[in-house]
Image (cartoon, rainbow, N blue to C red; front, side):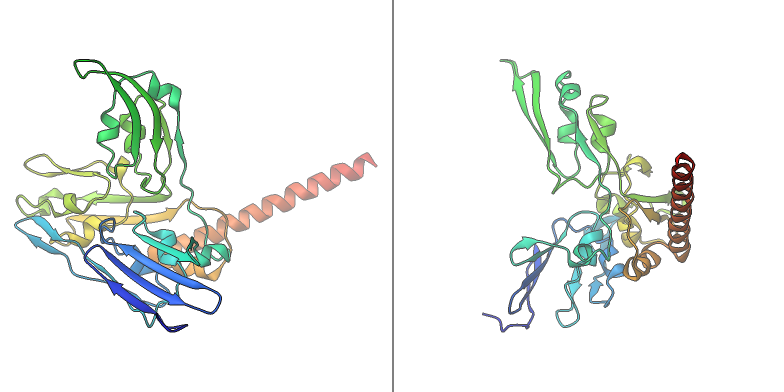
Length: 302
């Protein structure tokens, strides 16, 4: 049994766990290496630089080993910034056994806006099930009825597991029209320069969590509709400039904090921080104008 206030680290092939029991609270931070794509978002945002990333191993153009997350048990403060921004839900944090992100609970960090809606009527009107099999994370399930020959005759009760869904929009694009409404909380752009790619290299395809990158037998192809702009592709690319993934912002709930401004500057740019400040300033000015007009109307009525 670990001493109170002492962090214990357990590391295995599939999971890394940090446990810190306190007098009234018990913190447990975990990394699921099977879900982690090695994008490095957690390492970039960590305010105490407690997270480091291992080097990828690429052999004959294929990704053999992803960059692997490690966390310094002495430095980690269990703030949860890494958990709040992990694009693949590879990081999780519990307090007294319940999921909690302290920096979000304290309103120092926003919630990312992840819209997920399943329209059953639209999906039930079709017997197509390809979108279930092609979901990159296996987040979709359904009751599929087949006839004696194995042909699909009905699709019912389609479910999307929010714990697995990474909002890549694959289902929205490939399912029967109107079946899903999905929004990505990430803004950005990914550029692919295939002229720089080594012949036969598919490391970026191996790293991509959403199948936004595919290999057609001769070159890598990018479908930016599905990109999360996480940078996992760029992290494993053996040639600088062949793939560049850049964030330009996040879709999130309102927040006013130095912690979020610092994180945004690390993950996007100082311009993004200024843009958010400008937008908040504009919103405040609009509110003042509307309030003044409403007060003026009220005064006229008297």
